[in-house]
Image 1 (cartoon, rainbow, N blue to C red):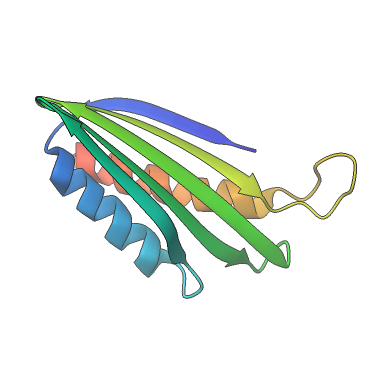
Image 2: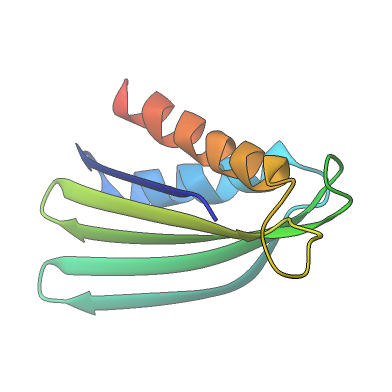
Length: 113
């Protein structure tokens, strides 16, 4: 399991669209498994769960992304899961790291605009 968190300033919907499109275009096997949206006043919350096949690990990995926005402030929290073939402990987590790196690249690129 790997985790990435970042707080940045920007447009919530713009970043959410960039994340969705970037993850889906980043891997031919990527899929959006489910999503949830919530708004209360000027607070927005979006949860996205992506999954893809990891060629490095020959298995599937998931990426859960939660975004919380208020005004121009956005908090992003992403956690990967899966990607190990061991029974009692995690080995070969390269697929998880690569999935998270793709999200990090998308968020960093958006923040650098």
